[in-house]
Length: 352
Ligand code: NAP
Ligand code: G4F
Image (cartoon, rainbow, N blue to C red; front, side):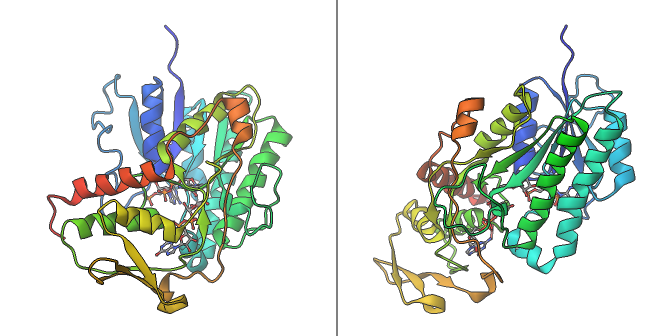
């Protein structure tokens, strides 16, 4: 019988970690996830696949406590598990928060990568371990180029983006220097019902769902005019895996090649609950009212502006299509529909 492949996922409790773990279990992998100790339980995204009994040999999903900033912990876990593939999804992944916590963000997003790559390097005579790094479109910063590709240069505009550029180059350095199969997946924004609640897409879908269920609050929002290339996380984790199965390690973009403003996202989400928005005012005074009733639905709030903004993102996924046969199918409208209806179902029985 063919031996099961072993995957180790950092960032297992996050959006992508959860989708990737489920995807790999379906592919018959044994999956280990690294989870931080937290004062309140934060495993809701993976509770459906978690089994407590670690002695059961049929249990293919195992959680280990750890933190990518702790080299001793990472080294001992990689030595103990001896994975075939490591997917490094752990990050302080919120761009606005990275302006408030630049050092912590860099320790996790950059130095954490060194800890993993060093362990893989030290083990390479014993086992060839493949490495996936969760790189990001945020590395590109503001460009005049309308569609970004793998050759576009990096000029990040946030501590988060800068920390990820460092990690990108480390991944490439270890690949070139030590012949490690190490790849950067340069992923544009991807969302889902499992998206963190403070990212714009989920903040909006939760707000709209609660409004549908009777809540009266106003949605307070930052920059309405930045544009993002929004895909679905479930499709993107398949792309990660495909990159790791390719014969050559390659850094590839995953994106939809479509771009929409935050404003368009909000309009589309309200439309899902049959509210047509009418925008009035400008700048910090801009707001949206229900076009039928005049009720204020959305207001701009300076609190959500960033010290610097990445205004526009659109990626060209042609290379991933050609080399991996990876192509996103879920479009902007379908993504928003799924997110809003999932949150309506989630909050239907809750009091808020
Ligand atoms: P997410 O939901 O914010 O999840 C981040 C994960 O990293 C969580 O499990 C978090 O654990 C964990 N983590 C944070 N600091 C850690 C540390 N020091 N040690 C170990 N684990 C740590 O992010 P995501 O949306 O799933 O994204 C996954 C990865 O892809 C991230 O690296 C992100 O930067 C990158 N990325 C995301 C997108 C996107 O649009 N989603 C696009 C491009 C790249 P806790 O639950 O304990 O906080
Ligand atoms: O949803 P966001 O916070 O995502 P952002 O900054 O694009 O970063 C996400 O995508 C990156 C890939 O490009 C990832 F690497 C990163 O880890 C993360 O997953 O914000 C999207 C846009 C921004 O322009 C922001 O200024 O929405 C704007 N925005 C307006 N009001 C807001 C808000 N963003 C948030 N989070 N909250 C607001 O109230």
